[in-house]
Amino acid sequence: MKYRNAAEILPDQLLKELQAYIDGSLLYIPKASTKKEWGARSGARTYYQERNREIQKQFHEGCSIDVLTEQYGLAYSTIKKIIYG
Image 1 (tube, rainbow, N blue to C red):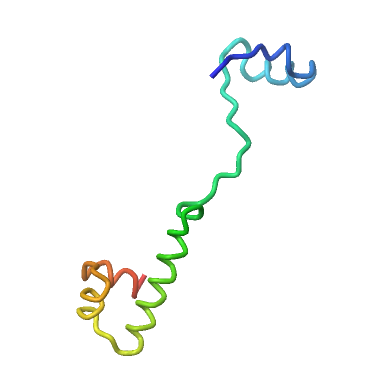
Image 2 (image 1 turned 135 degrees about the vertical axis):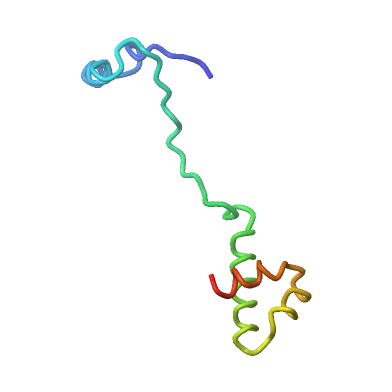
């Protein structure tokens, strides 16, 4: 990361306003990026949401938690969290 002199790049009015808050100290300004939610880029979020809906559907149709643990390879407590959470 390269430091830049604020006096060289900011308008005078904005520089004076910043100096009122942080005179002479270093200030980090993060990028203005649109950070995506977990799994949005890879599709994992959608995959797990669909899987969880299918688990809930099967449970409400009468499938037992024990059968669902075997079918999906998940722990009993995980299946319960998906169904009741």
